[in-house]
Image (cartoon, rainbow, N blue to C red; front, side, top):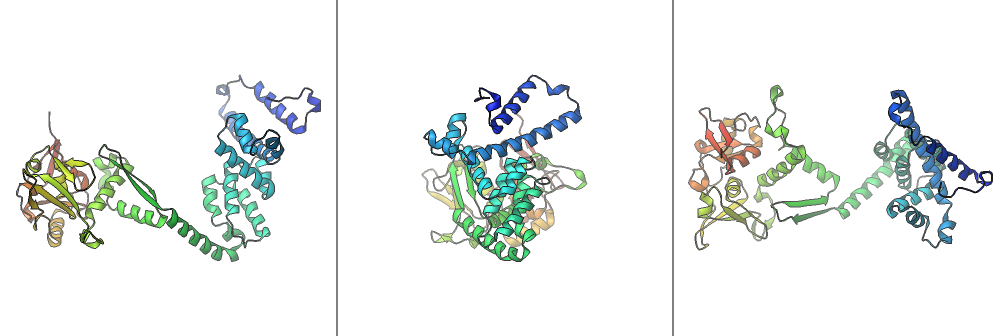
Length: 417
């Protein structure tokens, strides 16, 4: 130990106990657990957890009573003193000090649970937050019942489960108070969520933009529901397409892009005197080439001409085709997009994505010009095919080639070198 007493007989009982624990652990330091049987390992793992909880409770008890140590050494508080002495993270010791003060001053049953080894420090942190969040109108008797119930649940539930149960603890210990308290809590939670919500966009400069933010849970759940409409369904007969092997987080990102592309700009507020649109500028020569560059109006990065051709299939995108001297040759076409009635007829005919082997339902698909719009392709049923977002990207990718099969399926293959 760091501060072993000169004469063990003069040691304080706490120091004596810690000395015994330290000596006992040193005695097994060189013994390898690999030679223990499964039953012994199982018993030892659980015992270590129990001892850790007991030691954590003792440490919290010491921290709550060690204000004089900090004062004597000129530290701001015990957390700062302990962080310095043990080279620990100050945020961690501050959290431990808050927990120590809560257990010492307000929650004795929680302290006893930790001393018994049945409540872990993580569970204790959850319980103190739950109890501290109870409305001020809750009586001390009800608080004690809530504390006792939460401590009892520690033998059955993990910290995250305790947190969820704790949100409804009044429903268990004081049902008559629960409804009003729950309504107040939810109102405060929603108001706080609206104040804290944020959304940021950071252009990484490599063709990707990082989107991060906090959304109210109701808005986030609605967005997830919308995105699920675009993610890959499970195919019949146990078959799985390429999309099923793509990580789900990547599929959600693709679904977010598809959702944006399918928004009807006519339903959005006017922006600059017109319905909200994205304008893509591209020269006539680049539009016709496999490899070319197009620009998004504004401060965004350039995109490929192939991506511009794909976007031209989608409502809300206005392609501005430029000549050699940047004069506008064509600002969209009146017949560039399929009309709603045409789309219904195409989806009724095709039933699903026409890419070979793909069974994405037609309502989840986009309508593609078989002969590209950029090359004079007409906007009629004979020149149309439904493609899921994944295959719509593929068919516009210059690295891929495609052919229309006799059954109107589309075979898409990567070009050979």
